[in-house]
Length: 517
Image (cartoon, rainbow, N blue to C red; front, top):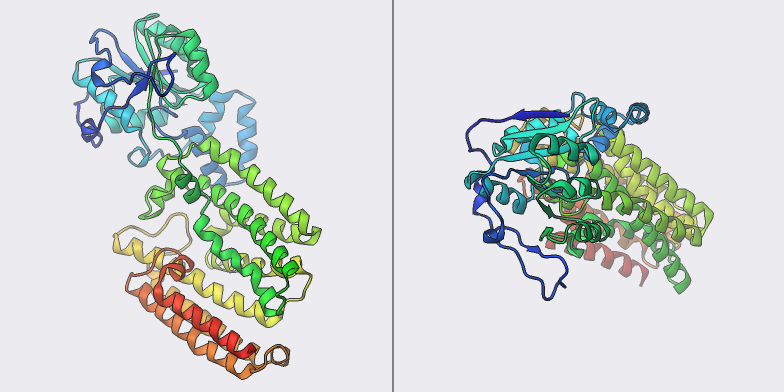
């Protein structure tokens, strides 16, 4: 356990939070409809009673232990063995192992404005304010120094885990039983609330709230922002489900328009949606620190703290279970394809995305696996020309995505990305490679639509060649708009939102319909 005092001035980057509205709370024993809500004036600001606040889940809308564990695994999957070894020596040893040489980046963390405003109000009233956390002392000290609102802090060391009874004993030894107020959020805080003068809770589960009400009828519950359906939809990347329409491509290419084929392909797409959401969730857990400094990814629900990390962790196996059930209802071979998709995506999240060009090849392969999955689900063959075409096109899109990301960093005068094996100087080469791969896809498409297998499926196969200039136009326009900084991070999302891209897609569809007429 560590305790350090802070005698620095009351200023800092977070001082402006005092202008925010103070959070409200429910007094126990009343329903939501009739509950009286606490305001700033309802809080006891006795200057002789120190105010102590927990960190993870309370002052922070996140959990540093979980964040650090996923980040460590993302950088080095083999660290899992080291984590297990450290855990044998206790949770304090595990936290010390995870935080060794790890950066906290306190300026980017998602602080709870309600709690932070209470701390500033207490400090302005003349109360002593302390941070008491089960997180490692290196992280707690960095956060305390950044916020410049605390008189001192208590934290976990390599030998003592400052949580539960340990934290309660520490605070009683420091301030005395019943001589401090405490803001917490979890079951581990129950022993601390028991010895506090005024227990204050935020983000508690139903069971913890019930135990706290029974133990301390005068406990105060602060209101907080809860995860909404919109936040979950954004986290699950529902807008990315459009990519799974590739599952239907083999069905359309083979002209299988019967209800049974459509139903099977729809199930296959649904399985990919479940699996993709699980992969996106896992990827965001690993990339939290990087996402928070990204111009658009910082608004993702996990990065902002809108969804608790533990809920996201629980959601991953649930989504994978749903994907498995749906895939097995189709066929065992299709379930195997979906398993390959998940394994490859996980490898990409943990390692492959950090290897030059291997990352874009992996991304293009993940798109192509969706097509293969559709063919396997329907029990039909997939043309090698179609596979090569998709690989070329999706390599182009993946390179375009890297171009946009790198261009954004250059425009923001940021250094080369630490979690990607690209330098800012690679920008022009990425554009050239994207153009080469894209126009190669046009060539492959021309060869494909000129083949005998295609001519046997269409009444006017020569009309299919009109698709080539349309695709050439779209790829060229996308590259130019990317150069002009008018493209979103993901070219696929850009294509769905851009009117001319949608018009190009309709024109391509019209060509294939006319060739079949």
